[in-house]
Image (cartoon, one colour):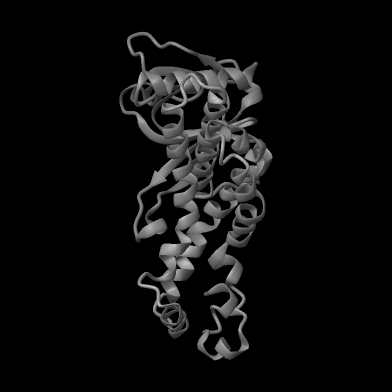
Length: 290
């Protein structure tokens, strides 16, 4: 109703020049998602109509294809920003009138994001009623995989908001974790005063743990609306994981751990919001280091 009309010569006069050739930005890979569901996933699902408890298998078989949602979500901020610029354009109003839609296009552009989050709710619900039956393990595995995709989507939404990093983030390997922490630093080089000062006041840092490096960023508070409200992270420094060591427990605080660099030349005391978050991070870092 909208995408096809952007290519319709009879509608061309209603489209402002800045909006022309921006179809891919506005709709992202919506068409790819649509074809996946229409040609593959729906047909697969239909084969389980008589055996709903086995539907977990269907998700597992298609799990790789679900990663197309990550691409869609990564493009979403660009799409929203474009929509905000042109939402009141005559072209969109005319399309909406023709379709007789009560809601405007942006409500529909949100659908894929809502859909991928809905799958995990449906799988949880099915699991609740499939405890001891055949297929329960597949359902559990499908749920875990979908939650993994949601985490990857969420992490990548934060990662695209990093500013000021010179290199190419893709070269740092997979993004494993991201989150906000209190950080104290203790450098062997430098004046005693700096050292003493550092002990008291923590810095707020947003950490991004990749396979090859951990990035320290400062969160910039959001302004604007919608996705522009999403925070951005200004890059401060990074540590190459090849030279990193970790102390898992810091005396007197179950939420703290240490990351140190180059044989303790630099030490970063990191305080997680909860002991659980700390445990998850320590596990991930340990995996990278081993």
